[in-house]
Amino acid sequence: MSIEGTLSQVCQAFRIPGEIVEYRALTSGNINSTYYVMCQDGQEKKDYLVQCVNAYVFKNPERVMHNIELVTEHIKKKLEVLNDLGVAKFSMKDNKIFVNKN
Image 1 (cartoon, rainbow, N blue to C red):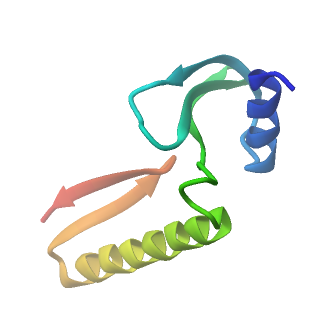
Image 2 (tube, one colour):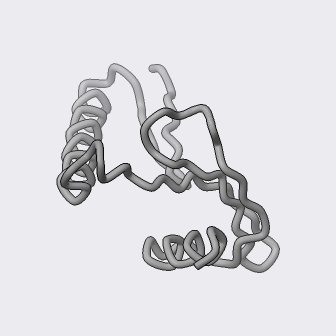
C-alpha cells in the first residue's frame, strides 16, 4: 500500500474529517516515522501530525498510546485545578490550549 493510502487509513481510524490534500515526511526524528498531513473538509483545511510508532523500539505500542492518554488526562485535571484557583484561565478550542492570566 502507498504511504498516502496508509495515511488515509490512519486519518479515518482517528475520525479526521475530509480528504488528504497534502502530506510530507518530517525527517528530523530518530525513532518514529512522522508525517505532516493537511486534510480538507469542504472549505476548511486543517493540519495534523501523524506518527507511526517504531515497534522495534516500543515493543507494545498500545501501552504507549495508553500512557499518552493518562498523561493528557493528568494535564487536563491540573489545568482545571489552576482554573478553579484563579491562577489563570485555560481553555481549549480545536485541540489548542489558550491561557488568559487573571
